[in-house]
Image (tube, rainbow, N blue to C red; front, side):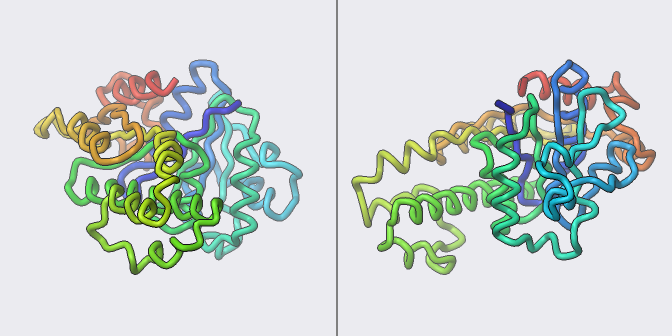
Length: 293
């Protein structure tokens, strides 16, 4: 069974696509069969990072039934063992994905016959992105050391919890909870503990079940664009705080050092880890890939 890693974070511009492409290429180089899926719907660019032309076959081919299964929508890249499922040729309003299409994609992802599946998600916390992140119980959060990015990561995690609890409530027919779980009922300062308390207030017998389901989540996170003058303990602090305030397990995978040559590699449509394999940032990415595998 494939290891599925959604890569998100809520905020744009933190390097999700760069890290997705880099991790996919490194793990494929080590002999694993890897597919990366561009789910930044409406802003697909993974093919460019891989130095490819926009593939004609992709997610669009699966949705319009040109191909019978999602595996057939995967195209080879120049890197052995690495495949891409692009969304660059999807219909113009793909960002507003139909519910039936979303469910179809999620179910198909779970059946892909690869060793590793990486999902490059778009920014924001709309229901589509949240549900794609919930495809797996092991997700990777990307953020930068700026306070706004860290704050967005906390908000993203809290929103994931909220979305999961709403799914569980519907699944277990917690009818009396529906009004308390409206968007207006959960204020900006609401913590995961507060959300749990709302649920338990209506049905305390479900406490064990709720905590058990949330404890299955294993969040990993990466700090990208990290500079030498920053506090080297930031990642460990973030891990400690998350493990203290949430019901899931959080693991800090590491920093990816800031390097201006990353932009150079992107502009030249060449993978950074191939163009500059002996830099600190490339070493950081290799260490993170090793932890994942």
